[in-house]
Length: 267
Length: 288
View 1: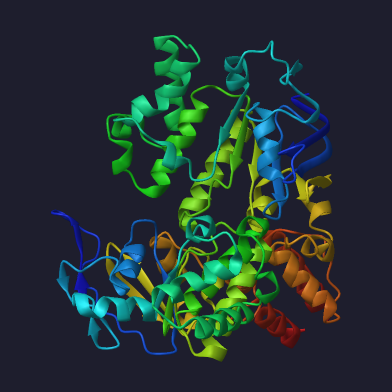
View 2 (view 1 turned 180 degrees about the vertical axis):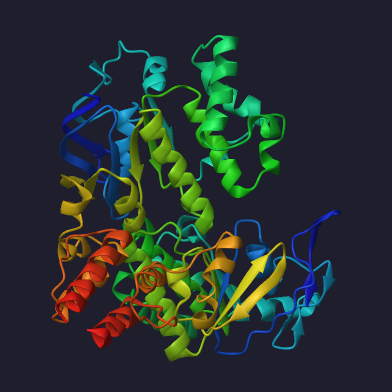
C-alpha cells in the first residue's frame, strides 16, 4: 500500500494496493508516465512512499535496519546493460553484489558459477563485458543479481534495447528462473508479447492500478487497452482480424502456436 | 541518386591490438525519396554506418556521395552536410536542453546559419510535422512534456534544419504501444508527403515490415542483403541465423505450412497474413 508524491500537486502513485505472491510471475504495463517505474523503485526501497507502506517478506522499506535484507531479496535489472556493469571481467562483475554482502570467498565462487550456469553464460566467465552482445550483457546483469540469491527480481524494460535474439535470450532466462528456480518475477514492459506467459497482468494508469487479471482475460479487452495507449500482442491482433473475417477463432488465443492449432482445428 | 556508398570500410582502433572491423566492403545506393529499414544484430555495424552518412565518422576506406557531393571531402563544410542529412539518435530526448520547446527546436537551424524568419518558419513547420500543436507547446519547457512528446520535440529539432535525408536509430524504443505507432506514422508521413528520404534502424521486424519499402540486413559488419521486405523476410532460417526474426504474421503462415496447410507464405505483414488465411478458408467453403 503506497502513495508517492514527487511534486506537491502531482502524485506519481495514488493509493495503490497490490500484493505479489512468492513464485508468481507478474507483468506490469501502462503508458509512459503511468507510474510503473516509480512502483518498481518503491518495491526495494530505492524510493520510499510518501504515504502508505511497502512490505517485503513482512519487512517494511521504511525501516532502515531492514533495507539491506530487502534489497538482497529484491533485485533489479534495468534497461541499459552498459549502465549495470561495474567490473572488467564477467565473473568479477557477477561477484560484485555477493562480495558486498560479506559472503565467504569459497561460497562466492560457488554462487557465481551457479548463477552464470542458470543464465547459460558460464563459458563467458573470463570475457570482458564489451566483448558481449546486448542480450549476453543483460544475462550477466541477471547473474549478478542472482548471485545474491534474491527471492524476487524486477525487470524494468530490460529487453527494450536488445535485438530479437537478445530479447528471446533474456525472456528465456526469466522464464527459467521463475519455473525452475522459483524466483518471483515482476516484469515491466511495453512489449505485450513478453507477458502472455505471466500468471497475472497489472495495468497502471495515472498512478493507479486500473486493470488486473490473467493474460487471457486481459487481452480479450483490446478496446479498453487501446484507450489506455496500450495494445494486444500481434498474434491476438491477427486472431481478431480472422474473427472479423468470419473465422470461428476462440478469443483466448495468445500465441502463434495456439493460433495455428485453432486454424488446424477449423480446417 | 541521393546516397551512394562504395566499398566502405571502417576499422576502430586501427593498428592496435583492439583493432576491430566494424564495416567491411559496404556498397549501396539509396534513392532520394526511399524509406529504408536497417536491421541487424547488436554490434552488426548499423550505428557505425549511419554515422558515416553525415560525417560523424570518416571511412577507413571507401567513398560516400550524398546528393552528388563527396561528403568525405574536407572541402565540404560540416554545415552543408547538416543541411542534407539529419540523424536522430536513440533516446534523443536526453539531448533536450533549452528552456522552451521553441528554443530547443531552433538550436540546430540557428547554428547552421538560417535567418530569423527562416528559423521561425522551420520551427513551426517541424513541430507541426511531428504531430504537436505549435501554439500549445512552443513556450513550454520540454522537460514538462510526456516521454512521447519529448521524443517528437527532439525529432523536430533535427527536421528544422530541413534535411533531405533523415536517419533514425530506434525512434520508437521505450515508448508505449500507442506512442510507438504515432511516431512511426509521423515518420511515414514525412516520407510520403514531404518526400524526405528515411533510413530507419530498428530491432522490431513488424515495424520494418509495416513501414519500409526496402530493407538492409547487416551481419558482422557486412551488408548481406538489400531488398524489398517481401524478399528479405522470405527466408526465416537465414534471418534467425543472424540473431534476427521474421514478423509475426509471416511466422504464423510458415507454421501453418509446416502443419501441412496449403498457404502462400509470401505475405509478411499481419494484414497480409490475415488476408491469405481468410482467402484459403473462403476457397474451401466455396468448394464445399
